Image (cartoon, rainbow, N blue to C red; front, side):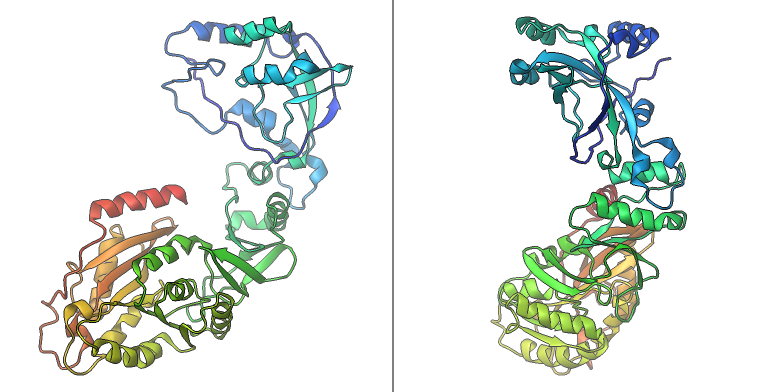
Length: 509
C-alpha cells in the first residue's frame, strides 16, 4: 500500500542563500527513474492526489513535514548533541531543480509558475545564471518538479508561448545557520524524540523560558539561538523556581545576552516599565486584562487587591473608574506608582502597599461603607479583582462580616472577580466549591466561571465572578448561610460553553 503525505513549507529566516557550486545537468540525475515511474502511476490511480496537481483533496492525513523534507531542509545530522553553539557546523549543500530562462521574460513567467516555483521564505526564487549573464535560473519545488512531465498543461502552454524549453536542471545551494528557524536548529541539536523549546514569553527585550530537565544541558545554546532568531530579544532567562506566593516573583537564570532586567512593554495600548526580576508580569494575561476592563463602566469603583504593576488598574482608570490598587511587594508598589504617572492616571488611582487581607479590611471596608450607604439611585457598580490564583480564594474569608449596619439592596452589592488554579476534572465546579467553602455559602446558582488559560497539562487558570451576598458581607445577619444562595447572577458560561472554551485554549497553547 502506498502512503502519500502532504507537505507544508517551513518558514526560513529571510536571509539569502549562498551559492556553493552551480552546475547544469540533465534532469535524469536529479531523482531515480523508479521514483519518476511511481509518480506517473500514482497520477492515474483513483483516490490519490499528488502534490503536483492543483486539486489536492485527499483522504490521507496531512502532517507538518515528511521524511524527505526533513532530510533535505533540516540542519546536518552531526550537530546532534551540540551544547556550545557553532554556527559554522550548520552548513549544508542541497540540490534544487531549476529552470533556465531569458532574464527579460522572468516577470511574465513567474506569475504562471506559482505552483511549480519553490515557496520557501529566505530563498530567492530567481537567481543569476553564473554561466550566462543574459539568463536567469528559476528555483523549483523539489517535491513537485522532477522532469519536464511535472509541468501542468497550462504551464507548458506559457513556456511554449515564451519560447522556453521545459528542461529541468539541478542547482547546488549551501544552506547556512541563517537559513534555519530556531525550531529546526533545536530539533536537530537536542536528543532525538525529546520536546523542543520553541515557545517563550516575551517581556520587552527579554525572552522568558521554562526549560525542562532534558533541555538544561543545552540551555546556553538555546538562549543564544533565541537571540539570533528573534529580532529585539537581547536577554534570555530561564525560571529556576516556582513563583513566590508572597511577592509573586521568581528566581531566574540568564542563559544568554545582557544582564538587564529593566524592561518596557506595551499591552492593550498602555505602557508599563518595571524590573522583570523583582515583579510579576505575564504577557499571556493580556486578553484577561482587556476582558475585565470591558466589563467596567465609566464611574464604576474598582478595588484591585493584588495589583502588580497595574495591568488592571491603569486601563480601568483610563476608563474613568475610581481605582484603589494594592500590592504587598514593595517593588510592585514602586512600579505601580511609576506606571500610573507614565500613563497619566496617577490622579485617578489610590495606591497601597499592604497585605491583601489588610487592604480588604481597611481601605476597602471604609470605601464600601461609604459607597453602599449612598442613595439607592446610585448607578455605578463596585468591582473587586483578586488576581493571585495560587491563594486568592483564601482571602475571600476577609469578606465575612466585613460591614456593619443594615444591608444595602442586592443590586448594589460588590462584584468579585477571583482567580484560581484547578487540576480537577471539572475545574469550573471545583472553583465554585472552593470559593463557596471559604464563604460558607453555595455559589452554584449565583456565580459564573471563566476559563482564562491552560497553565500546564491538567492545570487550568479560572476566574469566578459573583456578587457577595449580604448574608456574608454584613454582621449580625440571621439568615442561614448554608441554604442561602445569594443574589441571582446569570451564568456567563454554561458547562458546555466552558468545555468548548477549554478545548480552544488548550489548542492555542
